[in-house]
Length: 187
Image (cartoon, rainbow, N blue to C red; front, side):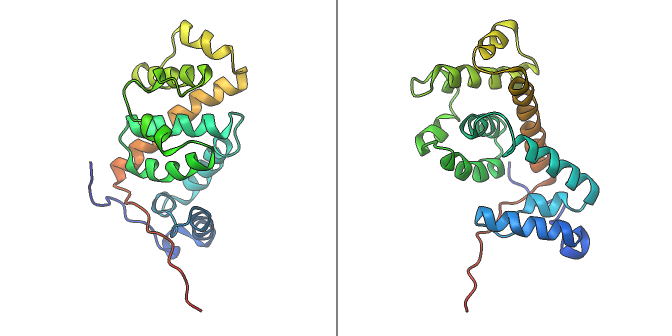
């Protein structure tokens, strides 16, 4: 669903110098102007910084591999039809070794059963789907994941799915618009 922004991205005077600096730096790293997500959430300064710390602990600072993290995030983004998340994480997924075909496949209903995924990645995708559908994992999915992941990684996986589902909800509800490509400065 496309809608206009319900909460417009904040200017520096509205989000503060620190938040504006963070947003600008993260935009440079992503090859965009300051991300609208950060400029919008930055309007709630204290919440933004707490969220940013939490989000950074999950990604890129988590215990799951970058590939596993991006598979998880992209699956959530596809299942929640969050174009903003998809746009950002297509690039990050490619950096983590996912092909364009892998990323596109994550949007199909039967993605977990495709032979291109390893056994652990297929089990990961089935777990993500079940978490999104039921907000829980049955004992069978839990046992399958225990073959590959330790307790900390499993805690992280559950939090990662929940976080990106929450973020998709916020992006959609607030009407956060796509980011603009970074303008090249002429010297």
